[in-house]
Length: 323
Ligand SMILES: CC(C)(COP(=O)(O)OP(=O)(O)OC[C@H]1O[C@@H](n2cnc3c(N)ncnc32)[C@H](O)[C@@H]1OP(=O)(O)O)[C@@H](O)C(=O)NCCC(=O)NCCS
Image (cartoon, rainbow, N blue to C red):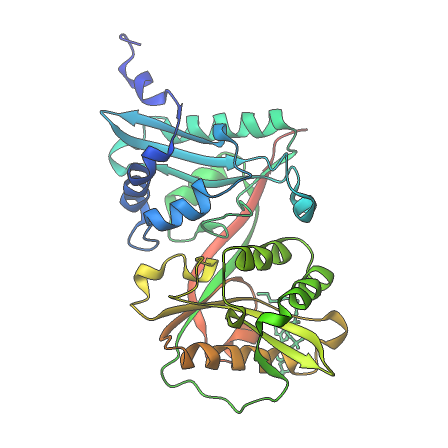
């Protein structure tokens, strides 16, 4: 090592909970203007991810600081509710301090992550990391990271977006089919989401209730006593940050979010989805929300009807790890 000082920069080490603020500092040096990382979000989605292997968070240190970080997981052991994500290997973050670029740190962190994912049995490495993601893909503003990934074999890129709206002047006619969920309906809401949207949305709805989340954070569409649609909303009082509120520092004190939203398959195309969307936005406005975000979607036509416009653009994609 003494003869080749650069190699010191390439030695990867596991991170621990004590590294939380160092990781936040590195992330914010890389992309904090657009995506301000907080200890709160790291505690929730990094340390709080019970599916994250200890070896899936590796860093490069220099003089007590973290100058490179990669977060990845193979999802090799997932609970039954998340079976469809089993062995969907993903990279959740790849950061190299701007002052340490061009020394091979990023290439080395990515190589170590890809090798670990392949060894765990993943056929591909995805730029989606789920559940407990920070971002739904690589932010388009990180052009150097996109180019870096392209030259290292990532492809099949597709865009997705976050949308935003100041809801100060929002209004809509009320719809008698739509109202906030009551505490007594929590289990029928869970059963609806499990039946219609098994997997990630069922998992996140369950997690909301387990975290002590209010039933009225979920707005439902009801027909003849049956739930036929649900919409998860977030305010500053919601116990968990959702994908829509991860970057709340950019949204002012009265931030809010929305999503997922879904209508029962056999009831789509009847205007219920748009009515549920409108009522859910109004519900958040009545609870004091001003800036509101809808995350991880491609449905600009649908959300555009409620006056939401594109805020952030991400690239999803993948790379085959096996022949
Ligand atoms: C997206 C969804 C909630 C819309 O609900 P819906 O009841 O089918 O939609 P509506 O009948 O209220 O449609 C209202 C308008 O939105 C448009 N719209 C509906 N779904 C759309 C879609 N997937 N993409 C673009 N526009 C869409 C409709 O064309 C309609 O516009 P129009 O009145 O000009 O014809 C519903 O299709 C659904 O549950 N899909 C599966 C889950 C999902 O994708 N959720 C969103 C994740 S970001």
